[in-house]
Image (cartoon, rainbow, N blue to C red; front, side):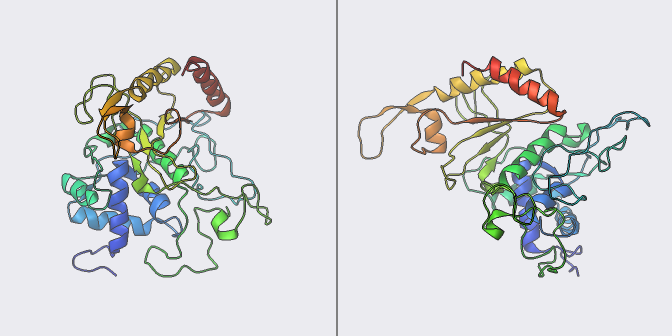
Length: 344
């Protein structure tokens, strides 16, 4: 039941989780917030309640949906976005929490329904900043993002969910124990290694084992610019701007600074390949800095002064995620990018 302050009946934990997620993602659907923050809940009602109460307090706002304005669904008999194949050993139904292609349940000429997009207000950004690491640069409010459907932003969100692999909690949206007879819908029968002590592969029940995830939503940053010259707040034009950056020193091996590019096919492969030269220029930038216990400064990679040092050699990795097309097209783009970026 709701209260006078929060009539939708959301919990404090639920509201904080939504604020923190939007502080990183900038714009998201209730469905994605459900995947990330409450994957063990039966539906996204708890997340929608949190959004409703946060909107009442002026912290979030919805001003668009995932279908661009003026977009028309395909005519009968024409192809639409294909539905993702169900993983081996799973049951049909909700989309798994492992990201991947997004399509319409049932295939045919049906496409995924439009979903309302949510973003933070200026007051919401201030509230989210209190829940994220203090050094985090919060960025803007993503105002107007819903006017064009935010297709690329949705793909970035799904990528981050796939990295994290959120694990269902033992509580539902009302913070009460889940009925043990109800299968969490987002798991679709996937077995988590931490639950069964299983290795990667197929569990003895025949269900596909879901890989363990890396980091949490607080490990990620979006809207990051890596200055080739200049400062982080005033970078030179042409500096790389990854779609997302992961900082997970607790991983094995430590991941101090992987950059992620999400390729939805909206750019030519040559444009994607050109980004690698910008990354190389940034990684090769050095500054004078005195190591701990030394008086004399020496040249050190600039990126290490921003993101720390894992002790490994070489440059941080760049992960490119391909999505938005069929398997053959995705494989072709991967091969083409590999050929164009071989020098890097």
